[in-house]
Image 1: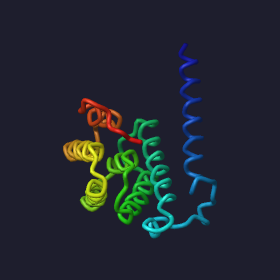
Image 2: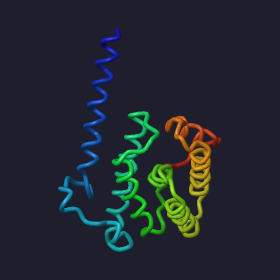
Image 3: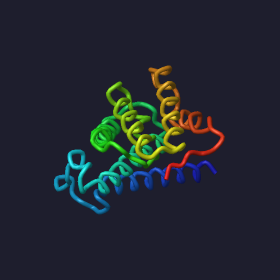
Length: 176
């Protein structure tokens, strides 16, 4: 029984690493070598907005995968790189009606500057497209930040934090 559990964990770990590799190598919906990638943080307001949104989803998926699959609440160079790229893009995009990437990326905000980027994006989104979902996600993000502020050592497990933040509502927010 124990050997099966160990083998299953090893198999799942390999699959997660494969998924991470796939997410790492996809850009603009296709495999593109890193040296040939466009800097979407500079062109998000223009014709590349759709690609910027896809890139934000990709970065959010990588962040979530790293945190959730490894049950990891600390910091790492990979997380810092992904979050840094996401914050740079969000700072130039203004309105972003997609709650999933904003929520996941916002949970990575460690500085006031990063939090201002998130709040600015949420304010612009709410002003252009007022929805209860955006207001709910904003409140969830602020609750996550409060938990981070109360736990500077990072002792609270990432998945537990998300569970507390998301389960504090009567209904599940739309992350579509």
